[in-house]
Picture (cartoon, rainbow, N blue to C red):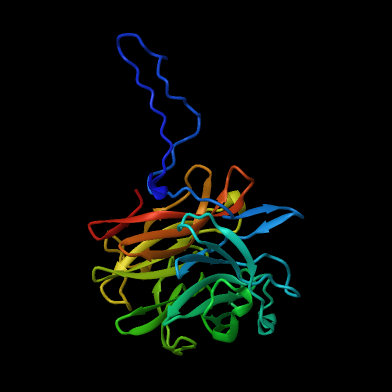
Length: 343
């Protein structure tokens, strides 16, 4: 059976002739997995106070030589010793079994931004060199920076060489927040989309993988929301359209989180981006792709990983069956009439 489509099914055939209860199928009482939601294996996030801290917030996936790697927000400590970006690997499939490797050392320059941990990583590969982008900030502040590190062996935490800040923001300096980076190629150039709350989602052209243009443009916002709660942007290209995925509403509150994943698309990487109803994402538009379902509360911090013709949605959630422990989930992402769907 395809491990990506493993679904537990209990079938009880009841015949009108009166043979109810004679089925040999055993009902385990466990709910069937949602179609497209992969059965995750191994270290996919756990927390036991004083014993285990296996962070899986804001997962981002890449691959090298048949091994998959996921990078996530680091262990939360304090500004004197902030948690570095956390790494895990799978030599099996995108569903695992995953094995936690540990954290990438945190560079000294981030002290200026007073983070408890480094946030929301993303990896871009170029001719065998891997560029790791991450955010340094304190919660609710736009005194922030997007940093970068490089490596040719992404699974070795000690191999990453930090390159310092790529984009910064600060009180009275910018109206945006320099966190949640996603770097990608489009229309012959390299781009970075980033941002959180404040003035919304920003797009900038990259001069090279470590140098961003000083010009940015806002491509998505939620002006009617009190806190402009939109962040964690991801852009992919498919069949002539550019799709922008973002996370909405409140994260980081355990089972009280209201995080959800929304989307829109544009014919040009620079926009304008619209939802299925034609509402501009810059004016609050967006369609919901995924929100809380059962014990998976507040899904978000998403990445899109593409393998051949299959797209995967990689995201975190708060486990309602485990007091809000943060875990990682991978789902098959499908498309209908030019729009993303989860089946």
